[in-house]
Figure 1 (cartoon, helix red, strand yellow):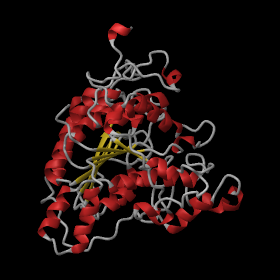
Figure 2 (figure 1 turned 60 degrees about the horizontal axis):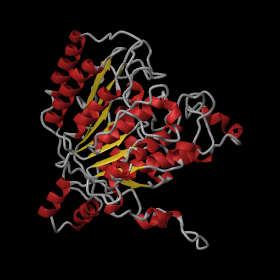
Figure 3 (figure 1 turned 180 degrees about the horizontal axis):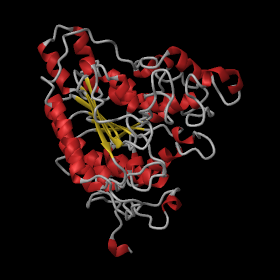
Figure 4 (figure 1 turned 90 degrees about the horizontal axis):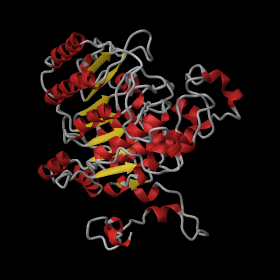
Length: 459
């Protein structure tokens, strides 16, 4: 571990877990509070920088979504819902995507966290370009900004809402933070790879970039038998300039760790060889775990995490986001474990004491034994057929696409000092000032020479 030198930034707003989709709804934002509590109590915060993220504005959201749709989300509330009845069907808002208190604030929080993660990327390729093209001031300034706020991995477990479309909500998703984040990445990166390990197909992201060769979308998901969203066949490969840049791996129910890894690693390895991305966005939907409320796969947290570890070790700037996951205790276990992988810090299988410890009864373990509900319907022959199809399509790519020299648009995020409201002059300590307080490095010292360490002879 001593040789691990990746800088990790973690984005979390304490209020994001307080929203509620409604009684009986499977999406539980509260899972984010549980995950954060585990991250803190495992001590993982000592291995990364934690930020209270920027809240995305309507302007940010309209980079992808229509003005009318974003305005609707901003204005509608449970109290005035009757006045918007005629818009509900056109924007696909209803049972799956209900109107709840604070809906727009929720969207602003998870979208802003994905955006701010990009502001902290360290893009070595553009430092190189700036060295060559020093006289192009616009490029130099952009690279300097990224360099001054550098990180190798950004984590936003509140993001990853991959079903939202340009004009409508879908599958519990309202604003597609992934698409907006990738659009921002494309200002500095010639090629961005999107990987999706949610049990549901990443249809919103694929649709957004279906016609371009600058973004390759790779989705591993359940397909068939009317499983939501009904897209993601292996023959959906992109169109026009984006032909062969959409990669779909349709899987059957019950897939286990060994079978999943069998198809995942070779596919991503081939994609990296042919596409050569300079940035990766990884959607870590946890509904692909065994015994998920809405899923039908049989992955363990270790199997799911192995995909994250594999992508981490590709050594490409990485934005990691959440996604689906509807058995709260398993989502919390999974994303806590994957946080530990991203910072390369082993953690105990025994869960630490937190205010949510009763959620994990009766075993109180990070990696409980997986009891599968169904047999693995994915034969080796079936997976080999998919792998062969993907490989043949990738061979159709002539070369990784390049981008002509162009003026880089200004960053979507405003300057940091403009992202926060004016501090309250009557408050002794406001949120902005508290967020700027950084614990000294020795605050968390826990080595053998720690002077505060209890001597065994004192016990």
